[in-house]
Amino acid sequence: MLPPFYQTLLRQHLSESQYLTLELLLLLIQTHRCVTLSKLASVFPQPIQKKVA
Image (cartoon, rainbow, N blue to C red; front, side, top):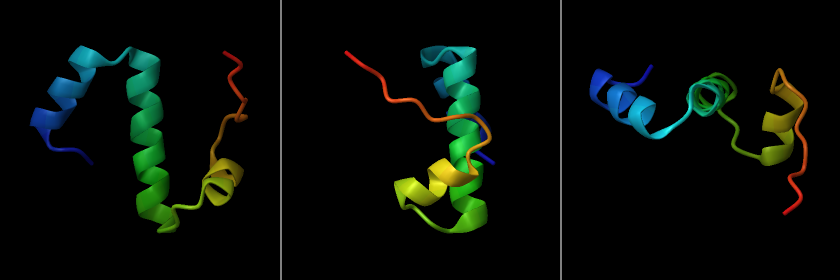
């Protein structure tokens, strides 16, 4: 999905769960060709939770 250079760079700067979430989001965007947040949230395999600061 991502070129090896980007994979290496992102793995250095993101936690494992952040990296996997990014990969999953990129896959969903490529598959569904839709970038509306509501559509992505509906097909995301984990529940989306609002983060309270």
